[in-house]
Length: 80
Image 1 (cartoon, one colour):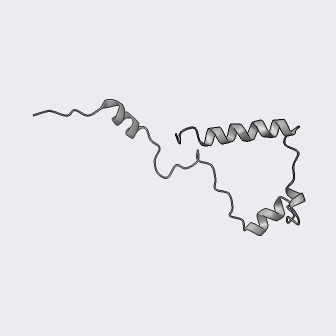
Image 2: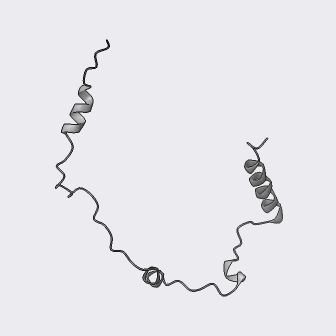
Image 3: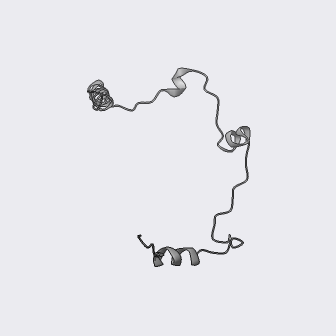
């Protein structure tokens, strides 16, 4: 029959953990805010049109085409 001996490193880890009542080193929980409170804190505005979402991400049509080709190839890389 195989004898199992305790692992010293595991015993040391269990013995070195802080007492359950010592939570001083854990971050304090933040107060819960509603969605409206979070939006007000960020001074957000509602989206009124698609133009609000427009961004000049690519400097040229060629750069956009390269990005789209790369994205398409990456998405389908493991499909074959």
